[in-house]
Amino acid sequence: MSSPKTVIVTGASQGIGAAIAKTFLARDYNVVATSRTISKAGYASSVNLALVDGDITLVETAVEVTKAAIERFGSIDHLVNVAGIYFSKPFIDYTAEDLRSLVSINLEGPVFITQLAVRQMLAQGMGGSVTSISAALADNPIAGDPAAVPMMTKGGINAITLSLANEYAREKIRFNAVAPGVVDTALHKGNLTPRSPMGTISRPEDIAEAVVFLTEASHVTGEVLHVDDGGHVGRW
Image 1 (cartoon, rainbow, N blue to C red):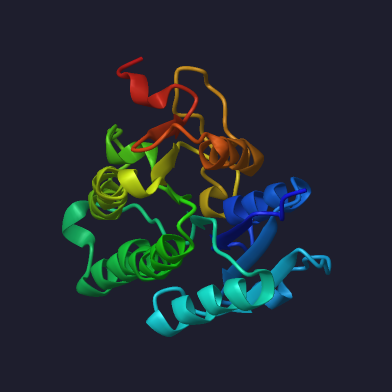
Image 2 (cartoon, rainbow, N blue to C red):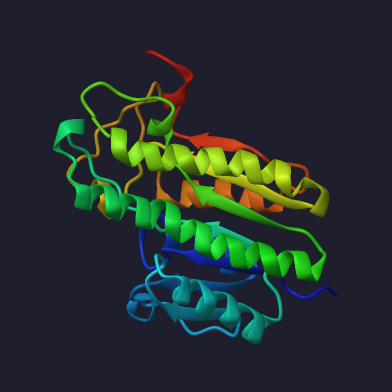
């Protein structure tokens, strides 16, 4: 019987990240879950779970998270980059502080942890996967929902996903992304208006199912999977 695979999930204290971490636990993965306050997120104790508090924008946090995975479970097989922020305002109203925050959390954080995870996967020589959370708005802007600067960072996630899928294909390390539309989380609290042809709103568990699919789909790489109730298909 093979040992459980180990997956790191960032931004795992609530919403999409928590749903992803709990879905992997239910499928008998070893899970290393991290966020600034993950130890206070109410996770039940489990031999398959390690919690690491830390700011994902810091290299030191990435080091601690990957170290915990290796010391506790002996490997890093998959990484899911969830931690991110989003806020909407007219382009000319975004401040320098807004830009720094968006770049730091949405781009620098994923880069730091992905570098270390990939380094470990290469050392293991068994392949692996990295799945990142993007956004449907990155390639399908909606009038009345100005989000140019946040989507610049999410578009960057899409771009690096394709580049890394190509760079590490021979090593069997796969890179994919999930691009949600409106999801019923605290991020969209008070703004849960359907913006899709289906006229429905996704749950965090719906995004988790897509992430698990990409993690386990051994022949899928370089994919940006939209879970947005059809919002990316064009005008409706």
